[in-house]
Amino acid sequence: MSPDRGVTPPEQRFAATRPRDAASIILIDRSSGTPKILMGKRGAGHVFMPGVYVFPGGRRDRYDHTLPFTGDLDPLVHSGLRKRVSRPLGVGGARALALAALRELHEETGLCASSSTTHVPDLSRLRFVARAITPPGHIRRYDTRFFCAFTDEAGVDPGAMHDTDELVDVSWLDTDALCSLNMAQITRSILEDVTKLMIVDPALSFENAVPFYFMRHGLAVREHL
Image (cartoon, rainbow, N blue to C red; front, side, top):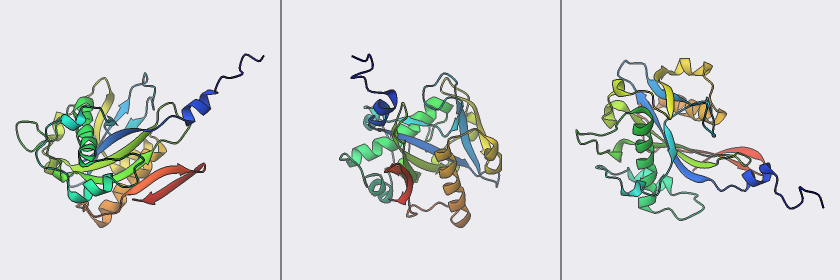
């Protein structure tokens, strides 16, 4: 009998991997007149996307729903997060995604998004701007919701960021400077979505359509939720 018989090839095992819920935050500093976006580079030791520039973020933890918050998510954000999900996602689960994004922001960059000295986050100014599911075949797969916020609305001190074990070269970057960075295509696509949207709607209204990126029958699809 062949020694490989009965052993599932790695690419098939990865294809069967169920995406885990995750969240990311696109933080924008508009204090200088020219919007700048916070990004950092994942360390070379990471299994998932090593050496790639990303927005702060990560998977939703089981305790994120217990984290404190002040203002709640806008109703349009709540409803958008709960569309086209494979498993039921209640109000608390949707809120936990936003709390996960802000928790990861603090862990990866040192920045706190809060409207007071208590460092309790205010979720009311978070926009839901994109969703993307990692294609089959990757060692890690995530169903990531991308939030967006302005530093002045979210109570973020732009100068308080620093490198961490998770992200290095954490910087506020002009959108023109992002073209030369090593980043995943999905990150670049979502960045382009947000940049184009800000041209026509600088305030990033809550009612804007949310692009959804995923694979269908082996083809990349971009639809709106």
